[in-house]
Length: 124
Image (tube, rainbow, N blue to C red):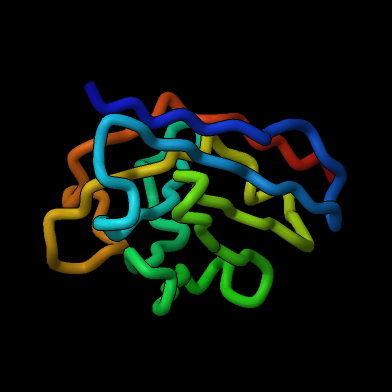
């Protein structure tokens, strides 16, 4: 059984930082592209960032480019998202996605497994 679990969310002031973590079990962790998405209340789930299986290629949504950094530690089966210079508009539930099926890695329809999410709230 595949399990994907996010952690690290919280309440932070604008300009602050948070690091999210995502652990995955039940599949071969270092075989798959993984990604972060987010969903604010009343909005569709949107892409944040994705990373190739070996961590060699990284992709970011324009809205977070230069502020967020995705990384992974394959021996620890963990994906990370370091978020700097946070803005109130970054407030959302953040989701980890695993087992990419091909196509654009920033396409939310291309993943088989999702976590339950971790809430990030940025106060102004």
